[in-house]
Image 1 (cartoon, rainbow, N blue to C red):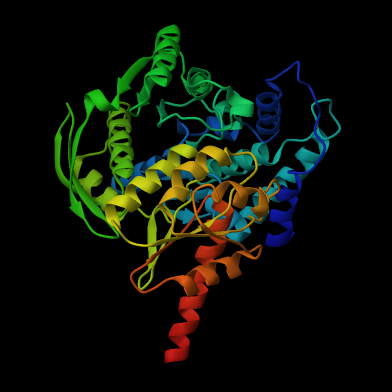
Image 2: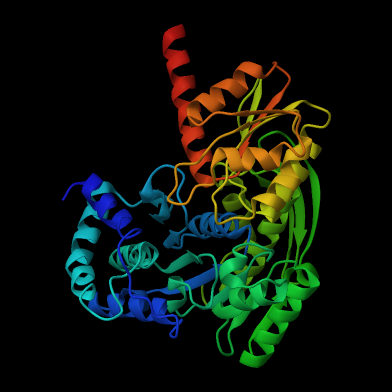
Length: 446
């Protein structure tokens, strides 16, 4: 099996027929448990942290991983989705699973997946198999701790098969309402499905309805709930296009002035949440001191999160894809680039709320280039453009994503800002294209 074949096999699970059992909503957990049991229960070989929420999950996980590495703790990190390479989902100590290790892990999974395809529950899904890949690899590498980003929900997500030493809930907002519920309370209740009996829960600042559901769940499970907005105190201290500084203190210690190579006030909140969780881990035998926090936060690498990848014109890529994350992107753009002309390259997936998302980001654009992401369920550019035209007078539809980015650069003056957002799949592709373009220009000039 080659790397391409291994990835193709996993991705093929996206379209394979699965058993339909609406009367048994726990089928997902049952399937992933059956698969992991066949593999020797690798998820029981290491401690884990589950991180659920609507936005900030990946950033919070990446910050925690960087700090734990600085503290000398062997840490696995599972995130989703990836930008360009499937291997981005699974890493140990910041290093992606190698092609050879991914091939070997998938090859071990194949006979079990095919055997399960003959059972009433059907084969594992793409997401369930991806969790199995990560957990199997983490066990093989003997990680001390795995940081696991939960999928769109929590209660029924495949990652919830893990038994976390603590649970983290980042900000909850409206997204995937067709699956999670139509109220913020219902969505938060699904996210809070990662809470464990008498466990420890760290919650980022929440809207009142979401917080009420989280408090109710923790009370029912007799879990200890620590609220970041009550426990942590932070203050932004300035920054640049590529980093920011802030002060942070907690009941445990005063961390002083910290540096973070990610911009936006939302990332400071994510950092405060990460440190609150790390303090909880320290109480559970994974010691993290102030120096590790300082070094780890300063070293964190998490691409395409309001990332400025070029100047003259400025090019900002951000994986915002739901209303909450698009609102955070807008706030950051208005703070960092006040008064500048913005050219928006925009695409969305059909399963996200493009009406609310568009209403938040499109009004700040002078021109919008709308395209279609490479995804199993893309929102057609023509449909998205119709919504964008409610807010932007100059709108172009360009189906080819690289051509859409090139058109935006063509329209931009040296002081303008090109913003690429709306879909992981669009951002990953354009970011990679921009890097290739810059490399080619450098070689040409030599």
